[in-house]
Image (cartoon, rainbow, N blue to C red; front, side, top):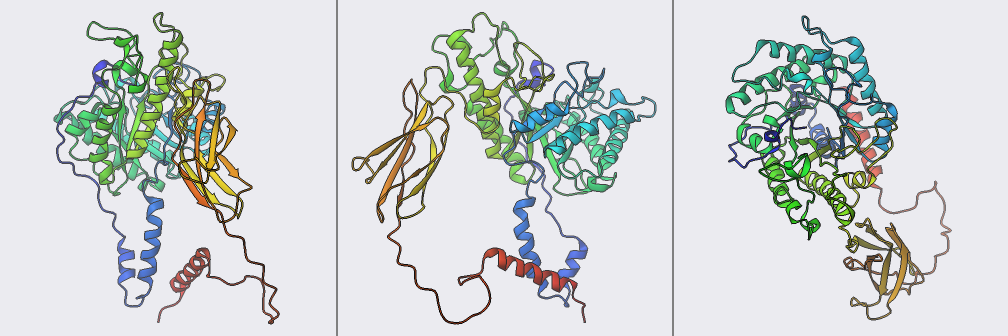
Length: 553
């Protein structure tokens, strides 16, 4: 998290030209193979295989969409695990994965667990970090291991010149870490730092030099480190400073395997803990969630338009050039226990917080930015925790739901949000199957309308459905007839708007089944028709393998 107010304020600045994104080159061996006069027919098949694989390889380092969570204040205290809260447990990791998160960032202290003469990391500590990573792997989670604040040995000492001691620590620590995890696949990423203090071009040049050391140390460690995705942090992990100062990424012998990290904390809404002479804490975020009575607690900046502008800078500068971006930390405090925030307005605050969570998650993923919520544990007011660190119980289910693809809570007294994505598919002469997306968190049920004209004035039939329903079959329909459908959510407050209309025409009465053919025989099974894509693919693969293995004249 930001260590002071300045770290979290993001100021607009002009963006310089950015040099990044090296094209992926084939190896010399493959180039020779495709040019060989002995293999003129293999190149098209190989090219087709590469084209088919590209979508799967693209940005394979993080899931799409990414629903990320930080194990904060656990492995990074300089005094050791347990100093700032309960130790990590497999039960907790399992609960996070089961809740719908697919990515975990592990903030880790390394310098505090190393001999300060030899810079050798305590083997017991390395084994403990590996244990936590293994728990994440067991739940098929993507994992980011970083070197967190750790007393500020790096982050508080970025100056205009390179410090040989810091550089030596970067090399020695990351050589050991990368060696220990050399066999781990691409579900494990390494991140060089957390929030490096950097505000000038000279400091960025120094920080970039430390990153060069980090990258080269990992690449030289062997195993899967040659192609592992590596994360480097922007100046102060601040979006505007990153946009202004970062004109090139660190050097890397492996093209296209660097990720850029920023953090996102619009201060007065997210982490401001008390009112100041220059401004107050914001209790409400989002244009539809402003209070009609507590006007001085409504956010006046940092909302939807600001989010679009900030994330758009990173998408244009990095993502559009093939460099993934992670929002390594973000979140908003849950403000409870405030004497002026009770009743309906407290409910409004809690609802607006889920709206913030959903909005950031959706906007980030839509632009190719990967959001990872900051959870540092802790009880009481002004916390961002989602799980009880001792019992692994989920303690903020509404927010977890919004962070993992579910809907936000509506403002108090609001009707439910309208469903979307209504689709109709014909199942038979008398049945149409319907599906839609439930965007509401407060519906009592749904009303599904069916009619034989698009204005729903002819043959109208309305079916009441239970809350959380997202599919239904319309049966007993007439053959060869066009039907129109719409759906809306309902509650005691009122009904939502209708979804868009979907239509489908039932099949005509099927022709009688022809008698079986008496013409002879032949082998089994399959019937006529075109061969399947799977079958053709299998033939193509077999042909490619046969040609690859065949001896050459």
